[in-house]
Image (cartoon, rainbow, N blue to C red; front, side, top):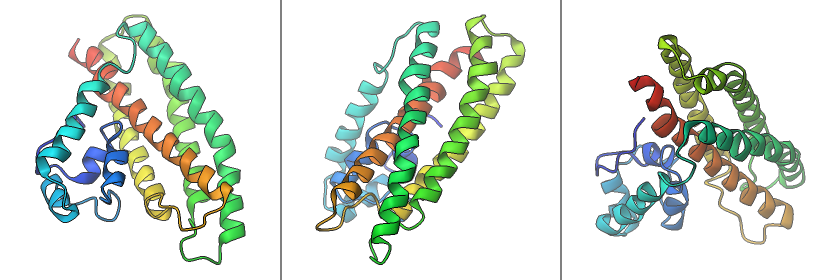
Length: 220
């Protein structure tokens, strides 16, 4: 999916494609999970925030997204490997047990993130399978200059990004939009802070591949 800020674009499309959009929506009380089917225009109207101002905030993210990583292909791949692949694995390693702890300790509360640990485990398995394919097959092909057959593994990676996006929506749903209840403990706060950072990183990761790296080889 390419970035689009049309008033008719849905909130979920933008949140799952544009790095930083999720936080913009959260600041204005716009749900991109349960209310994610709403158009940008509808979301602005419902939140009472002018559409032009909301679009301007999102456009600033679009303008900045292209400068997030090195431009040269080899350096960009290395950046993705260290900044995203390694980081996702390291963060999920501590976020999953933390989610299990919060669910166990606060499971009697309605606001508890029931199912969050399970969703994070599913995300970890999804990402690891995806990243191993890139590390062992796709990225080495790209570093060797690519070939006419490279469009096929790229298509698979794009399809898997759609599956990852569905998992991000699931995480957003079971965590109630990562909204902390009043009086949340330190563990709960750390969990939601970590999950927000992780999910934002995953969106940035997919953006760099979908919109910057992959098109270089698809066009060729």
